[in-house]
Amino acid sequence: MIAAQLLAYYFTELKDDQLKKIDKYLFSMRFSDDTLKDLMSRFKREMEAGLGRDTNATATVKMLPTFVRSIPQGSEKGDFIALDLGGSNFRILRVKVTQDKKQPVQMESQVYETPDDIIHGSGSQLFDHVADCLGDFMEKQNIKDKKLPVGFTFSFPCAQTKLDEAVLVTWTKKFKASGVEGADVVKLLNKAIQKRGDYEADIMAVVNDTVGTMMTCGFDDQRCEVGIIIGTGTNACYMEELRHIDLVEGDEGRMCINTEWGAFGDDGSLEDIRTEFDREIDRGSLNPGVCSFEKMISGMYLGEIVRQILIDLTKRGFLFRGQISETLKTRGIFETKFLSQIESDRLALLQVRAILQQLGLDSTCDDSIIVKEVCGTVSRRAAQICGAGMAAVVDKIRENRGLDHLEVTVGVDGTLYKLHPHFSRIFQQTVKDLAPKCDVTFLLSEDGSGKGAALITAVGCRQRELDAQQH
Ligand code: G6P
Ligand code: BGC
Image 1 (cartoon, rainbow, N blue to C red):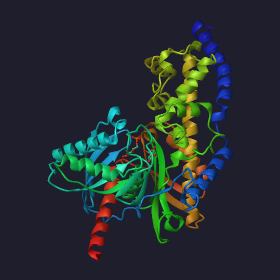
Image 2 (image 1 turned 45 degrees about the vertical axis):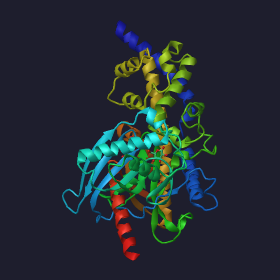
Image 3 (image 1 turned 180 degrees about the horizontal axis):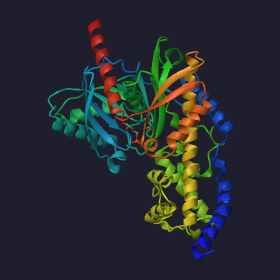
Image 4 (image 1 turned 90 degrees about the vertical axis):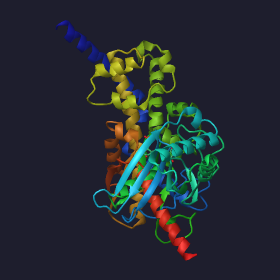
């Protein structure tokens, strides 16, 4: 054998032996079909608990009513502003909806920065910033003299009793501005706009990003009755029968429910599948003790889970020659976008190694193989448990309607879903396996949730006109 072949042989041998040990080590993060089925049933029970009058208070999955009662009808029209705050971008849009067959929706948008000192400062600083950006946008659009209806996509859990009132239950993801939890964000924004005094705005609707996504996709596909976000955070919404929603009056028709599924497991009910790494990232997070399900799935956390595992594997001597570098100790260094890159099938091991080296992780070829395996295990687990949640949602819709077979479309958005090379496939396969009586089409939202927020605002405007006529 020539030297190069010998070297390759040596690496393969080493790899196989180590991989077996790594495989064993990662075992607790790989789920059987039975575990996933069980997870789906548990989630279904939590949804029921969230909807029930007597069980809502203690349920982790809050099943928040949104006061959105139907998907787009196609008859919406008008000129709207949409604010989109809470994902990786803060965006302001102008959305014109017409009856034009060729191009019914026209949008112009601008992305604004949300620096850390603002999202972690005081509530009034945050809403002053939003009002300033809105002022800038209206100036640029030359509409400062108009009082356009505004739809506000606010991607956090909010308790609503009507479309234009939303009390923040708790901050999630990267946000932690003081004095906002427990307050109505419409009031806070109105106050900030009035303080400036140079323009007016009519905030007609507050919309979760899942709901905005469902509506955006529902405009093109009337069967879209579910929305899901798999991005910085994760969540899902769907059309529920009003008769099942104990917290809202009335029995006729349907209402969109924002499940806020990220909180699933906050009562300890997922402890059998959480690992020491999940607990470690929880301890180091901005909001310890909450968002258990979200922290196992979404983009804000997957990279951190991988980093925790890499530290542990290094301590055990499996990686990086047993040396824990300062880089590896740095929180946030392993962003989820690196998972997506490392897991790409198009990337050769040498390129994986180059990424690790760019990150300051001095790796061998074997290290690269192990890191890729760890990334694959963490993202697969995320996609599967997220799929179990989605399977529970679509199967509940099917049962609600007493159908043997349901055809439904799910509107999807979020950077993790869009950028990761395998997440969407594993997620969709899990839904198919766990909910075989549902034929689910996944529709990627290309336009973000701002478009959906504008469509909901259009419905809000029409309702307000009707109410005015009746009084
Ligand atoms: C869409 C919406 C945002 C939403 C985001 C989630 O683009 O317009 O409101 O929060 O998806 O994605 P991200 O990956 O940025 O968290
Ligand atoms: C929030 C949800 C949101 C999701 C996706 C979660 O952290 O609680 O309201 O829909 O992130 O952005």
